[in-house]
Image 1 (cartoon, rainbow over the protein chains, first blue to last red):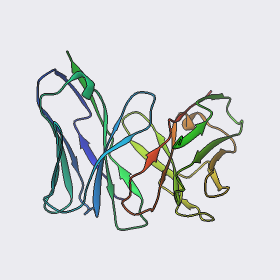
Image 2: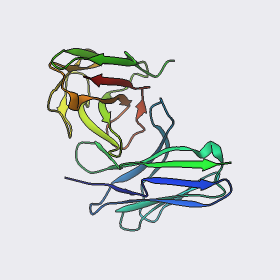
Image 3: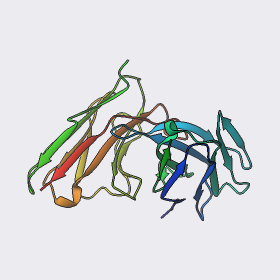
Length: 111
Length: 113
């Protein structure tokens, strides 16, 4: 059974601070996705990383895929209250095209 | 273009009752999925349909059945609801099953008493 460990589970910070969320597995992914979910809604895709060592930037969000394609991180610079939400990583393994989701990181950014 | 729609949004059942959760997508996607979301456990795959006419079990299929009615619609049925099935249920679709963006519906919040 493939597992994705996401940390931390909860994060409460002040506006303007930086933060990093981690996603780790003992298995190799063919790709990894990061989703953001707001209360009462379904997750929405932020980014997909495919190549080991890949770095993608989305405004103040930086996503990195580990060289061995077993781990990933999401770094937010100068967090804002609008960044508040649940962040989920999801790994695609080479079997059947199914995504395996991490437990999620509940981020709260206080003004 | 509504994307992925789910009905109902909220439902309360008594133990042993049955119900069907409906999901439809208007993006002409081939693959559809049912997940459940519980606190601290992320999203867990219940069943999926890689293409019209096929369905397969996911990580937590026990107590559920599915029907891929046509390319647009994918329903999830609870035959005899149990309190352990209290959860938020999400339907998702994707054009192709491997590595493509999954588009999620707004969810159904189900409580089983």
